[in-house]
Image 1 (cartoon, rainbow, N blue to C red):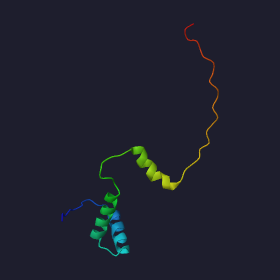
Image 2: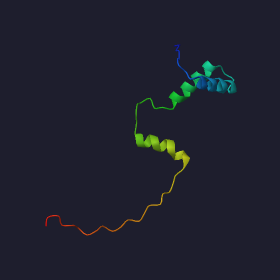
Image 3: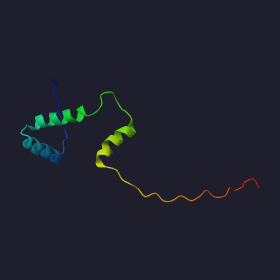
Length: 83
């Protein structure tokens, strides 16, 4: 298996990782591996897809919103610009 080192990790982020790892009964290394595994398993391996569909899939579980649309005025009289 490969090995990697992550440098310049913010102290607060490292502390949050330590707490989350402890809550899950894992080492920080195991927790980081699990976070990477989960994050990369949800992304499609086939490359970028339809952006609108991706946004819709993320937002849809949050529910919809109904907007009040203002009434539209009738189209005005045509202006003759040739005169």
